[in-house]
Image 1: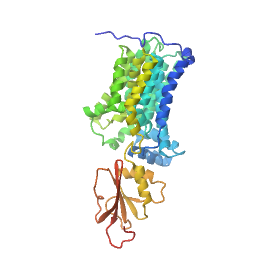
Image 2: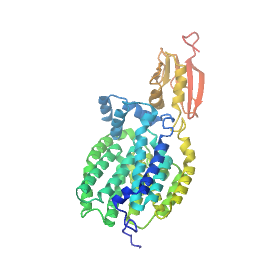
Image 3: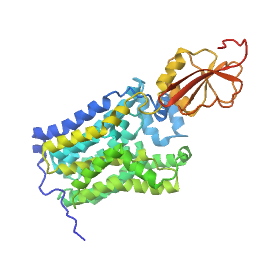
Image 4: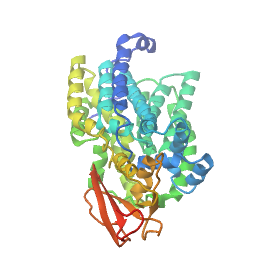
Length: 467
């Protein structure tokens, strides 16, 4: 068996002061960050909210006491994110504003990924890693979603960045670095408890840093103390979430197919995964850093799949926190390439990702176009109207009707005597009558991307407001 090479790179990295002064180093960080900022803000408010985003809008619109009470019974694992958005939405509640924290978190993640690649392999790798993460359809999709996944991805990268920095600085500055690492681990687990599976790679990163000749005389002790301190708050959140596990009982046990979906989700599309995977293979070296990055990318999906066989837990989007490792592995291929190679691959990545990048920014880019459906209802709404109560209408339609002058009541089953007409929302492939209601006739229907909206009225001659 070949012996593992213990060094991270064949040449020592430049000094910290020199990295600070180098215009090339600044440009290597600025280019992917600027790309990410422009791309993730582009049409951020155009896609209509989908079901989970509408849940974010609805639940964070509660009073603080009501939200805390809600989290004590449901969604404790999302508590930190909901509390953050509760304060954030005091300043606005539009789609773009709801999604802006996710966009900024993804931009920050791109910056840290580029900085890690610069420290490990140089400026070309920094630009490549940052651009590949910024251009991935996954990053665009979740940078523009009002859910905690982009924030968790940023914190996963921040934990690695703090860990590496803590291992390179001696004395008091190094101890401050370990405190930063503990805080990053705590925030990571509080925001998304399953994201803590990425910690499986951290001992390998400590070993890689130690093999590179830095990290102090007792890095293992410092790491154990820091990670133990960081896990205190996530343990409390995890315990509360476990007691509420019935709320995710709908998640099915994992299979080989869903495991494959998890790896595809890290890139956003199969084509982009192939591109990143090919570059990652070219960038692999027989060193401890490569092993650590492979563990970050590959072990959490396997561990979550094993957990998912015991209790509902496995969803591909829970594993997006592993995506930065793949971008870093792909960027490592450019440690010995020139800047023109980076530009060429950047153009190739944009070409591969362009179609999904544009599709996800359409009004139906996140799911059915509830915004247009709500607009249709608003223009023909009457005081005696109702909306058939479904999971979709509870969440998404309510958000888009919140400021309308007409607020149709929500019903299920038989219509109250005071309701003369009922609006029914269903997937565009369904053509069913209102459930639990008889004696109605359909007077209007319209199809939107992913959604069919129909209006039904009581078939009683002479009824007030008929027709």
